[in-house]
Image (tube, rainbow, N blue to C red; front, top):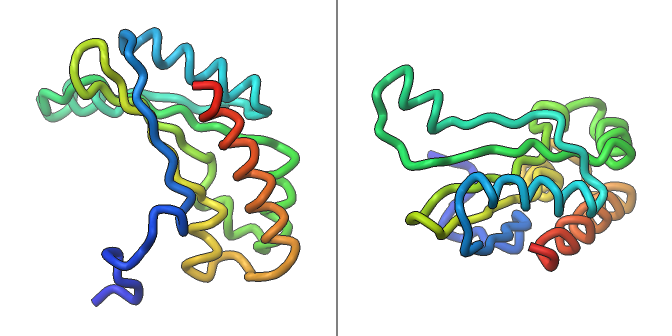
Length: 145
């Protein structure tokens, strides 16, 4: 049995954000990368699970892409505030998947909120500031998408 009932978690509790983009999949990836970079994130890691799964297990998946976004200053503070534990959730992923040709879903959850929710991060003022700062950065990015 899970210690938390997933059905009772409000998407706001985990900082869930999503939107749709009416554009080609590759163009959406470029757009999301650019917008998140402009909002203060770097994208040190990115990959296509759909390409990997289609190649390795013949999954026949529609296009799906992960952009691992990171704001180094906030990441450093988060590592310090969690005695290094939050690194297990790095980077902050933003995913882009094709719902249908020309229509892409962009989705993100806050690893900072999730870490606090499951006890990996303290529920103190420093972590609250980190959650608020990352939330503002993500909000800025989603407003620009």
